Length: 171
Ligand SMILES: [Zn+2]
Image 1 (cartoon, helix red, strand yellow):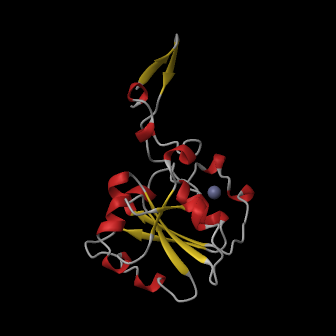
Image 2 (image 1 turned 90 degrees about the vertical axis):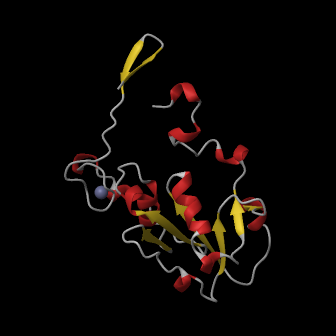
């Protein structure tokens, strides 16, 4: 697909798969960034819940986040018909929250200001809106887990997916 940005035609590749990618960062071998991924040890535990389809995308940044965050985990859902059981995540050693912008969700920035006796575990659905919402609605084990969100004004600099781009720029 070619878009015209001003007078400059820009070739946009819709190819999603990389041939023979690095099995860790999933980028092309010549572009592998594994050697420079920082290793960060946080008290907060991050658990990414990723749909199998999403994981195949070269642009899946969740894969990189799990490499960078020592205290993190990735759970892949959608590999077979039975839903993944997320109950083992709900340990007493953490206070768990689900990253999901429901009506009652509290701002993440407010959450971190409250002193806590336990570290936070943040379950983060990774994927498009439809995939992410299924993590909230199809897992009864998460029904009582409080939801947290980042408001639009805080999200803007970090949200790069085309789904929020102005209509004129969508592919
Ligand atoms: Zn790599």
